[in-house]
Length: 127
Image (cartoon, rainbow, N blue to C red):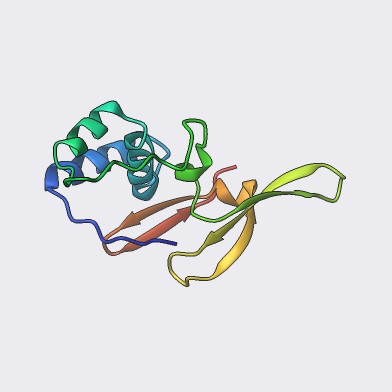
């Protein structure tokens, strides 16, 4: 898993915070969504081409516009497992940000919303 430290102007910080407050997305999902869309964006390609090195070409993204799990969920794999009733359920492999522990979680666990503040966080279970 790639964990970059990103520095950006307070204008972007405010914008990301406002999006987080207005949606069910956390900051990481918002940044991943922006990168996801940028890879397919003509405007983004135009900006990059203006800074392209001589004899270099822009790479194409390894994802499609329909691969929303790539930005929506924590990095890791997704697979289907059969539950006790014989029905399939979606299980994702995620890495815990605090402990770096890799574990498998079901959709029910992924519906937990984390709200973070500078002093700590609150964990809300929805559903």
